[in-house]
Amino acid sequence: MRINLETAKAEQKSPMRVARGSHGICCIGFMIYVCSGKKSDQNLISSFERYDVLEDKWEMLQECQHASVRSLLIPFEKKFIYKVGGVNISSKITDSVVTIRLLSFSGEIQHFQKRVDGYRNFFEYHHRAAQ
Image (tube, rainbow, N blue to C red; front, side, top):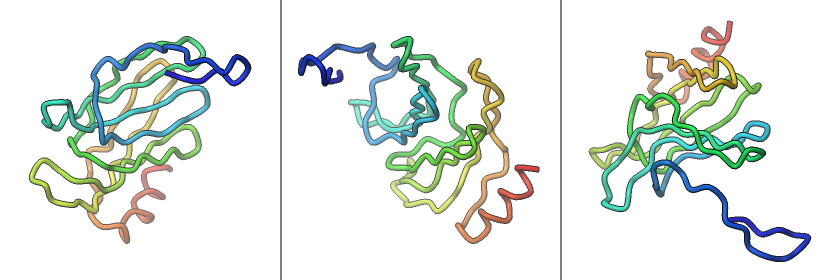
C-alpha cells in the first residue's frame, strides 16, 4: 500500500511474491530490492525479489546465498548490493558481508561465492571484487 499525497488516499499495490518480515531492503533507481527474511511460520527464507515502482510489478531473482533476518542491504554504484550482517538460521549474529553484483536490470545477478567474514576484511575484498 502507499498513500497518494495528492488525494490523501491509500492505494493498493502489487503484493510480494513471497510474503516476509525482518528482511533486508534497499532501493536503486525505481527498483526496490528485498532479500531473505522470515515467513509468517517463522522459517527463514533466502529468496530475493525486486519491485519495479513504475510498473507495479514484483520479480523473483536468484536465491540469496544465506538465509537471514535483519540484514542490511547497501546499494553501491547501481551495480552492487552488499548484504551485511543479520541473524542466521542458528540464531547467531553474523558479521559477514555478501556481495551481489547486478549484471543488468533484466534480473540477472551474480553472487560472489566468497563470503567475507569480518567487517575489517570487507573494504579490501570490495576493491578486488569491483575491479
